[in-house]
Image 1 (cartoon, rainbow, N blue to C red):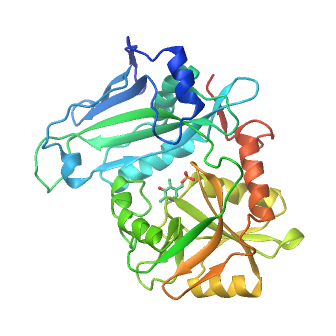
Image 2 (cartoon, rainbow, N blue to C red):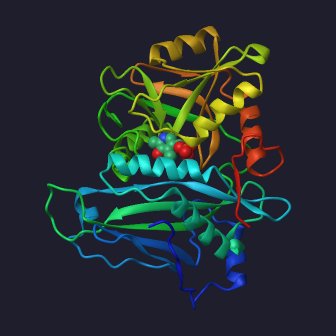
Image 3 (cartoon, protein in one colour):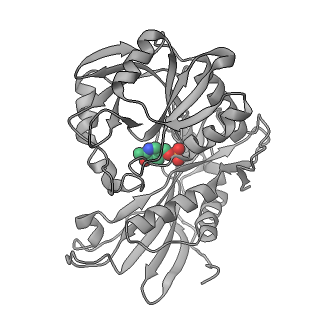
Length: 366
Ligand SMILES: *Cc1c(COP(=O)(O)O)cnc(C)c1O
């Protein structure tokens, strides 16, 4: 299969323009969905086929469908942005397509040609262009995902059929009324991923296992959980569904360190973009490692000036306070740092077209 022809089935019960405006006024995150979705099916004999744009709505699946029992599922997340000139763009969609296929390989699922992945996004976004918000910092969040659809409880082999879908959700700016630092809980009781496991794949199962730790973080008075390595419970890996960056020094001497991709971390596209962007702003970067003892000592001595998390949904989120079973401390003054805010402004600037795009990251859709 070289190209997929999408069958277009437009909804005859789209929400009215007035209702859409009402929903777009305060969409929240991941609560409101557009009128249509993408579906593409895969079977062993036909490969990817039956590609369509169809009305958004429930799926009908047999209770014995594989995804419900063994969790063979994975997803992606990216955004479509409306710029001041009215055009609609996405950010590095081919990077999401490539990561999607790396996740597929880990989960024993068939890969989807990158062009078909991006074409699906383009078709959905151009159909739903009226759902791409105009308010500053708002966007249309795109959620591609794939599920195992074989019926049966056999556990010895991967599913022999799959369904790929893309849904779209208008979303408000993550921070309303200014960027607010989060507090984090260092999870020593639970681990997110172990060597050889699925930590580098964007699969739902990684999240299913994380909610109990997130609930513990909240009980400890923190916003988010920080994951440590599975072996020693010392080496910092990620924060919730975001990658972490550590800023050493300040001003002209500032440099960035982010935990290396050991196989247990999710390779974030925001992380990768910052590793590319920062050196061009005069901020050297390094992929390394940091223990929780080094984190605490670095903040105490002032050598470690800022810490932030990054990911598509919230872009860049400062970390203000750290708490673990053995103590609690502030990062810098607990307020957003200068390097954090500068990187955030640069990245958001490229996405919304207020800054040039020297890296070719912007993919125009409409
Ligand atoms: C999606 C995700 C990230 C961030 O990836 P981006 O491509 O930057 O959005 C980080 N960690 C986890 C666990 C994730 O699922």
